[in-house]
Image 1 (cartoon, rainbow, N blue to C red):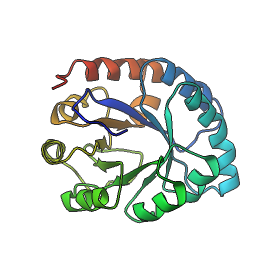
Image 2: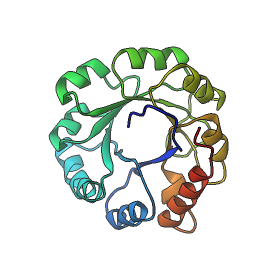
Image 3: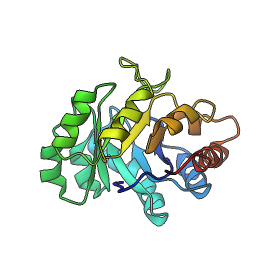
Image 4: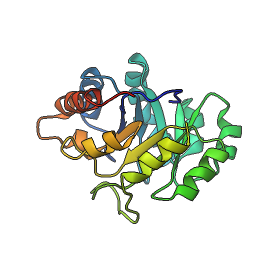
Length: 215
């Protein structure tokens, strides 16, 4: 997900914690509704075999559409799946170690909360992107860090490494983050819990992102 020049924001979907049932159909509908750069597989409290069983059909859906599958938190699961990347929280491992295990071509993202220092450290450690947030209240996880959109603008002015905005993003509140310079909008509930369905949410996000200046 690296880039040389500023281009319109892209959508980075994060799975709900429950990816069973009809979720593969929801994912298919969402990915077919508009361009999505990446899909993060994020489940909690499952042993690796069960997590892999749930991930494999979703990985196939993503691969068929050219969408990168990123595994949340779990370097070993990312290696087992041959995933396109791994996203690391501050307590989930070192980007350099992840690179050693997963190889040079895998995307490595790092959660940096609202910290410029953590983001610079992640870049120096070889991360492919940094994630800032939460920008808005979210029901997906407990929010301990609140970020201001200004950090996205600061990052864009200083570094070429892409930045991801995360935390409570919906079609109603995304525009300030797009305008501030987010390369990617990481969205979970704002798509899967959208009242008109995931496909409609993706179409609306796409329209918002394409309406921005691309300079």
